[in-house]
Amino acid sequence: MDSYLLPLGVWAQLMIGDLRARATDAWHRRNDETGVDEAVTKMIWLAVGIGVAVVATAFFISIFNTAKSSVPDPIPPTP
Image 1 (cartoon, one colour):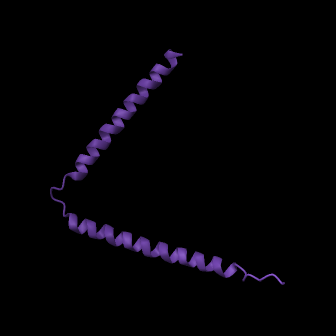
Image 2 (image 1 turned 30 degrees about the horizontal axis):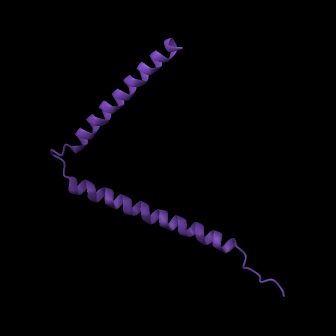
Image 3 (image 1 turned 60 degrees about the horizontal axis):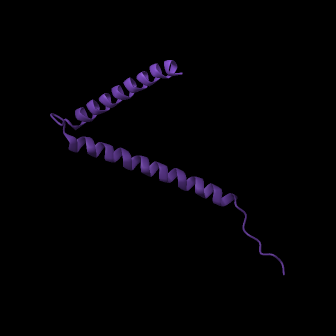
């Protein structure tokens, strides 16, 4: 059984180590702010986020109003 699991374990360990090294490298490259104006980039992402929030709100309000109009009014039971 070990002769089958050992190569799988080695392969998984190498893949996890490579993934961790890539993530660490990407994190360090992301934090390198030489020559990049962060204020403009942040303002663009903020505008995109606000736009997505407005579109999502309009979509959910229209879905809610459509569902609300299809629900019948409750009728009280007769005594």
